[in-house]
Image (tube, rainbow, N blue to C red; front, side):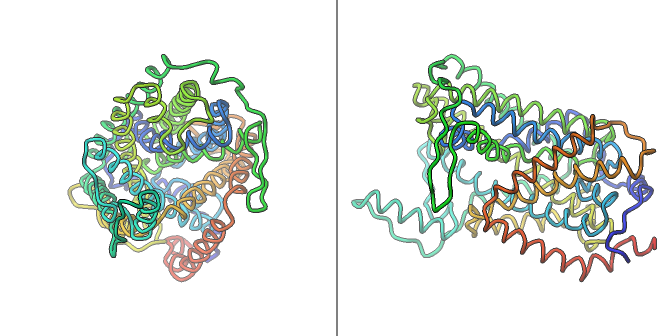
Length: 494
């Protein structure tokens, strides 16, 4: 009954043999899921804030640094998925190496990552969808596309800016677009992994095509003078007693911590191991390939963006669209807004997909009720947990102002990344005889750097986020001792 007990590799192998999920995903289908999770609204929004306030044209270096940091974790993920190709992702890897209590804590925080991430994306999707409709002359009422608190704030902002055209404060508000898109995605996920993968492939083709359009078309409007100086002189300002560093190498590092969150999602590929045709080879390939492809696209977009418009003149809310608009290419705004809307749809799809597979892995081990591992008799998807996840996300996105807690998503990710980097080194020592179709190169160097990088980013997270994270973790530990520890399948082995 030790909380440090480890799930035997033989138990993982038994799980793989009795897998009831449909194995339909090829290596390129998995890679597409990775790209679908990574490229979203971040490339169209975070680039503006990071370049304008912190890095200037050196934003490209920030993407390189963040990409290298993610690469450390991705190489460790790749080895684990080749050894333990199961749907639990970092949770399963921790269970097979570090122990049950750590595995539970990682799984509990992956729930936070995917659930909070999908909720945040649903709200962001609603914002882009409303912008898209506005471009066609259709305007949503504020109370129907925001939660109540946000709607009241937006009405107050509008009335302050337009005293001659006042809007009454709403008595009720509901984010209808966010609610509806969640149920559309839920329906696709319940229907089956093949349908989800096809939908994702179509969206990925659209948004990658638009990203390439931004790069190729924008390249003709680059003014090399906008890149001078490439790394602006460092400045420091005091905000609420805290020294804020902008520009210089310190600013480049700060920007790297911001744009890092545009990479979150490649780990979701590892949750699809149970539906991969050849998981031991294809999942590691997809993890690394999707990360490398997106890193190259991010670097090129940042160079084009800061070349089209001087960094200190970039619009922080919609930098890509405004850069094209300022250069007289107003028609491109339609394409870019459409791509951002489509891109967020696939991000949400992959996050919800990953969430239900984490539940499935934990339920198979007895740490969660059987409800979460029940598969649909025809579609072979965990339909009950998918519908439950859809219900929670849709209601939360429609009624809750989640902008202040979205950083919680990143906390769960950073912890999972660090733990995987630790676990892969432990497994090399404990089980050197295991077959490893893919081996992390220089594993002790890569693993150590991966841990250091992710802990470094966690250090920069806001104090209030740390408090919320500790509360969430404490609740998780209580649930483990109240249910998971007693119901664990390892009790039967012992």
